[in-house]
Image (cartoon, rainbow, N blue to C red; front, side, top):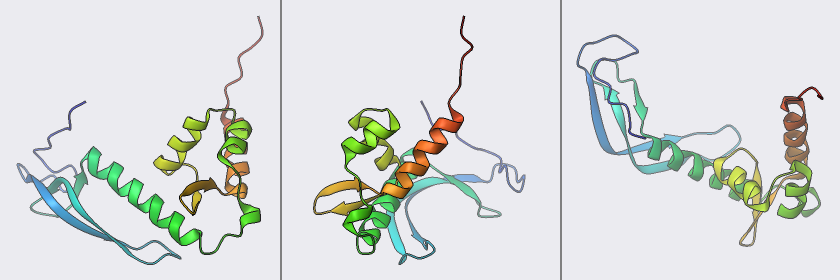
Amino acid sequence: MREKKWIDCPACGAKKSMRPQKELTERIVLSGYPPIQIDGLEGQFCDCCGEGFWSRASERRITRLLTQHRAVEDSKRVVAADLASVREAAALLHISVQGVHKMMNDGRLPFVLAGDRKMPIRKDLTQCAREKAQTAISYPAR
C-alpha cells in the first residue's frame, strides 16, 4: 500500500504546505526510561505549523526501537521469577509461538532480554490474556 501524499496541512489548514523530509532524527523521552535518539526517519511535515506524519516505515522503526529500548532497561529491573517462556505465553494467549514473537516485536506484549532471548513479563502476559478474553466475540450457537 502506498503512502498518502499530503498537499494541504490537516492541522492548520495551510494550502500546499506539506513537504516530504528525510534523514530526520527524533529524541524520545519515555517516563521511567532514559531518553533514546532515533535517526534515519522520514515523513511529511507542514512548512507553516511544523505538524506532520511519519512514514509507515518510520513508524515501524520507532516502535521496534522503543520496544527494544524498554526491554533492555526492564531487563535490569525485572527478576527471573516474573518472566514466562514464549511457549507459556503462546499457550496462555491461544496463539502460535510466532504470534507471540510478532506481538513482542510490534510492542503489543512487553518483554525483557535475558541473554539473547526475548521473554514476556508474566504480569503483562496475564493482563493481555484477560483483555483478549474480554474482547473476544462470542457467536450464538445454531
